[in-house]
Amino acid sequence: MNKLKQTSLNALLSLLEDEDTQVSTMAMEELIRHHDIEHLVAEHQESPSPLLRSRIHQLGNILNLRKCRNDFIAQVESGSMTLWSGLSQINYQYNPRMSPSAIDTLVEDLVKQLPDPLNTVRLSTFMRSEGFSYSGDEILEPELYLLEDVLQHRLGSPILLSVIARHLGRLRGWRSTVVLFKGKHCLLDSRGHLIEPAETWRITRLPRHDHLHPCGNREIWMTVLCQLFLSAVLEGRLLTIQRTGSILTTLCGGDFGRLPFPLGS
Image 1 (cartoon, rainbow, N blue to C red):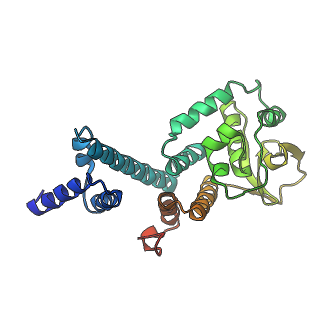
Image 2: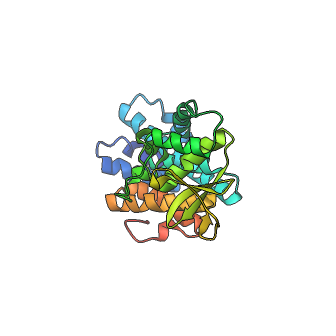
Image 3: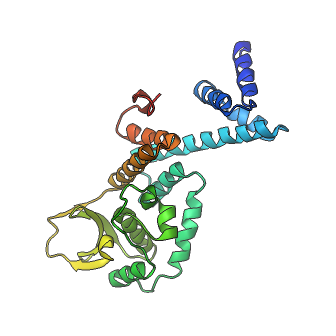
């Protein structure tokens, strides 16, 4: 590392200890933008200075979120990401305090209660008896589009309710497809039965599938990301806007940094 770069790095490091959070935030932004700082985080994460240690941990969390975001985008583009893993990663980008493993733990508790053997009627009855529902109100509430909240509070959007039921069923060998039917996300089983989460998990036998649109993984991820992005804009959550917006623009072939302030740079 040349002497000038080291001097700049030391100056920014000292600013991280500034009591003024605005100053330290600017220093963090500069470090992330212009420096390879993985070694810096490793070197100072056990600093004797409580303030510096806290700021270094913040930097580490930012780097980890960015890495997970890049990994998610790469796996989406390569087609190697499962639907459930993708939604878990989106949840993590929105709320870093809830890891994908913690979400899986919530699912494991539900799986233990599933009837065996599992079929369409039994799964629909189970979801209804567990209280999974959609009120139809506040459609832009972010909690309706986050796995952690829907699993914990049982209230979700039709798309999340469908994905959760599909995932539970797959863990027990029951197969289904997420589809759009009359503007609402539902599940279609292998025998042509439609399950409608928004209609208290009603089951209907459809004579034809002309009005159904099967939803691919990418479509589902993009729908959820768009809803979370809009929610973040309405609530003024700038960090969440940046994280969800950067994924959306990258997957659409754009550059989030070129968007006008306060969205981009």
